[in-house]
Image (tube, rainbow, N blue to C red; front, side, top):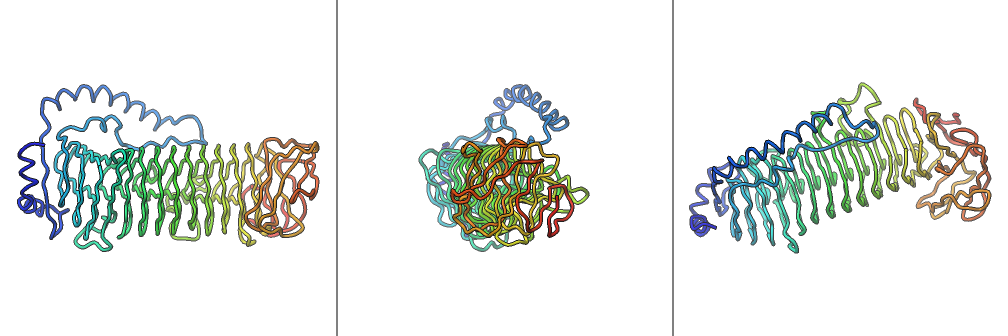
Length: 514
């Protein structure tokens, strides 16, 4: 640190007078202004390197945007954060012991330690700023703990072995209406590190990025009054450990004005969430490629106009629908006006992974089509006959994987004729209690799959890659044979009762339909 900056830290009153002229600084805070200048020579030398790296990336990005990847079942979500720019943080490199509010006005790397009892870190610059949090505890009695007014990108990194705590105030006075999170950024925000970040969102949200939000690594414990983690344009989780308690949605992308934005992508990590509304909500697309995701409490588990699951282990517990594309009974449904011209804009693609749903409403519900191409899908569905374990507006297309979906028998949807895998639709003669084991075996006694239901049920959709048309299989209840079934066609019905819809569109109606 330079002598000039040391003098500024020691003379907090001078910094306070300067910082109060900025909109982000509130009355009563002790301010420290941190400034620095990036060498002009370094900037000029970096320009050719940046151009060499950036031009091919732009060409590749445009090719993906216009030509796609050749698969209609997987998306190619990627946000606009420049990976190369993140490695070029010019300007200051300083270590700062926090004692009062600190305003950063120049690009650079700032390692922060210490405590702010009533104040914040605020950032206002045109460049890239990296904050390395190493044992920071910031509480603000009026506003966010970290506030990004302007920056190209802000990187917040937690140092190895450190625990860092950010706490905002229950009320904000004098702030713009959209500022509403303990960690709040108007611009692109990247979170990373090997330490822990604890975020207490007492006003509304915990972590907010008004543009793209990317989380690369780290441990995050978020307790918020409304949304836990929100990126307006996108949320992209590469890895990390998350424990989220949210009064609203646990993870959310909420740009409802631009069709190409408002998406969530998860490549890995471990996520445990308890939400007052949706576990994970995206206005446009939700893509899950890996990770361990447990939605322990929610109104709806996963909700988006388009949901694509390519991998990972996912479990959701819900008061309404488990997986929902694109609307439910609450007001949080994706903006229907954006997609109202065709139900083909809504879809759920399950291409892999292991999915467990425990729902009071529909287990898996698509306002368009539902595609099950691979993976393991287990649903403990609704016990009331107004909902079904599976539901689709335009059809269920089953082409691979294992499906065990049990629930009430009043409103049933099954795979349609476009399916290439075989399944059974079983109406049981009685309502079986929670804890009942259902299994399917081959004629030689080999078990194909079994499931112990967490709730009562009277109907089951059962599908497997091992099923073959014309072969006979045996259904067991609590290890006693219930019946034998010879498959004949895409979906073979066993028993009578309730409503059955062979996944081909149209409205479900009581009574048998084949």
